[in-house]
Length: 507
Image (cartoon, rainbow, N blue to C red; front, side, top):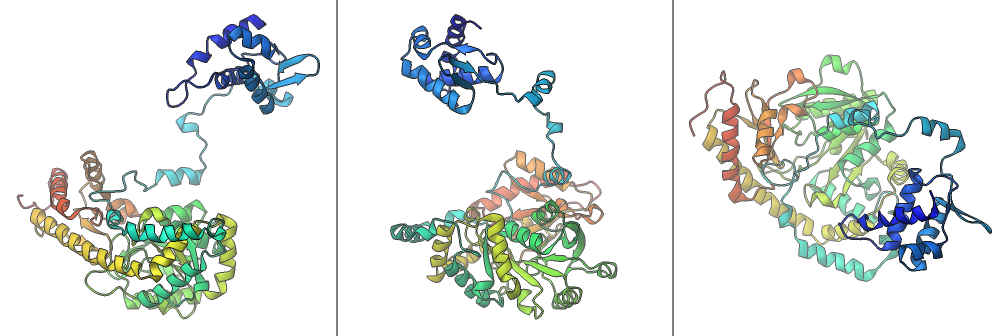
């Protein structure tokens, strides 16, 4: 390319170079970007001498500083090089050892089928349960964040900003902010009968990180974990992504149903939601709890107790934790503030046996580099000053009212034709459907009509035992919208009601 043609090359392109917002960029940036792309794509050959900055500025009708900026930036990034007494040249950006291969086989962006996911990566994405919609009727597992006491939180936040303590803005100590760990330990001892001290409490970003930490530090690739079937989709995803084999154990009215064949093959982990089984809502019986604890102690298995939303119990007081019954220290207890506060806070906790506390604190810092100490300090004050307990009491009353409204709506449209489970606690209930009813199709049609429900059958690992139904969250639905929203959902259910099932009452 001749020097004169380089000027033409730039003039043809710089006026068309726009930024992401559709605005014209400064000319010096345009020259830099056009030349960089030309070097990278070999439109400007290696060794080509570029005109002097003075000459090129004259040809383009811009100041010399404009061209100098582009040249200097390209030299610093390795696209151009200077030679003493000779000028500026296009640098060789392709190593000799791969130049031939690069010229022979130009790079082609991978297709959708060739993105190179690992087997477990493909499995993780293929069975993902995440949803882009996180609010409204009838998204399960979401609290009403519009009623969070923002003014109180803001006051506490401003207090800490005024103090401007450096330790709140750097990485967290191993285990997290100590005053918050103390507040959580005090709360759990009273509200959940958890036996723990602050030193056993680790602050995490939520249930997923707590489970990931426990499985990584206590389990090896290929070891087995019993999981409830059905169970929370995140449980399977976390365990399988780090090479832990998940073994489905069916759930009945008393919780995890350990069969003789299962007992003959002891697992490394047993993952349970004993206080409010997810998603069916059953409570593990006392006899099952004792059996599970005795078995774990005998077989040296670790029980991971997921106590995700037991604060919201409407018919009776919250049930004591399984951890509080554990005399052999085989239970790791995990909880989250996502349901009691707001999901965006991303604060959870893991309570480990005393012997594990030091190594888990080290592992937490080594793997994840804990932070968010500032938010942890605000949350600690929020709990110590009594705002947390007040907020839970207020929301428990509201959610009980919304649960009652949803049950009334179900009875109005279906009478006794459909059953529900899990309505005594938590933020959702499961609406049971006939086995030949396509719950996935119902959910897809509901999404097209602006409703968010989840198919119960997708929470099962063993498709042969999967029950059909819908997961209905009510906590994040304004009370006055529950009836009208369910009327729309009821119409969709009727459209998919199987012909061979018991007829529904007329609406």
